[in-house]
Image (cartoon, rainbow, N blue to C red; front, side, top):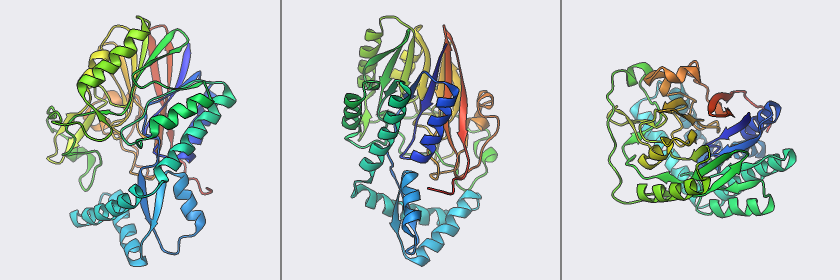
Length: 369
């Protein structure tokens, strides 16, 4: 039997990452599969009197602190707490959005994304070297432009660490095929977060609709045709062996790719190319991420699809959309978890063609950075 640790959407949270890696060590995993979005890509307002310890704690969680005046911070704290309690008004949400956009602008002008990504890669590299474990990895949609270069440089230092975007790697008797970045679909009208409406009433009875395809490919995106070409290269190298497909983008209409439009419609937004390869006889499992509020297990035919969810905390409450949309998810996460510091990863076990997975849920509040 092969036991693997799945990670996705780390977003620079080296504290939760360390917790999960230690859990993997205790469980006795045989390797790591990481499906992208590793670097910090968030900014968080802090009080002007915040000390270095507070700022260092945020940076350890993958969040760049930026100072605002005391009145702005007090208003932010109230509105964000109302958001967590699902009491925020539309005006509150607009105010939060403006403040986070200000933070995003400051983030773009800094080197924080590169520094946090480097920290995450070093943490994984050290874990793999210390425990003699392979790590197979692809970049995500939120990773900075130089992410692939940093991953390749890590692999040069530590041969156990390998970037497999558009490639294939051996893992015992298994082949692992990788596809990074995000396959372009029209997500401009899509939101992943629940705002002022209650989960049950928000999702109940909403119909599903197929999203439109992008007319052009944006930053950190690849077209469906290019995704199919890259997957074809990887599967050719697999030479018919059993495949674990490591894809940042979920397969289309797999149940791991559900999002909610501003009009309140639940619809799939995954990749058709990934779905095509997921349905091939040799594919045993798809390990994916990207859609952070659609955590859980589903199947396409006989292929298990695992959306490991978001490892990073502090960004949004951990809420499993699929607990409301279908019953399959309850076998993975029995209840909806409304926990601001929550994060997730997964352990998968492969024995022959039998594949199963279970979550690792990190919800503890860590006081010491």
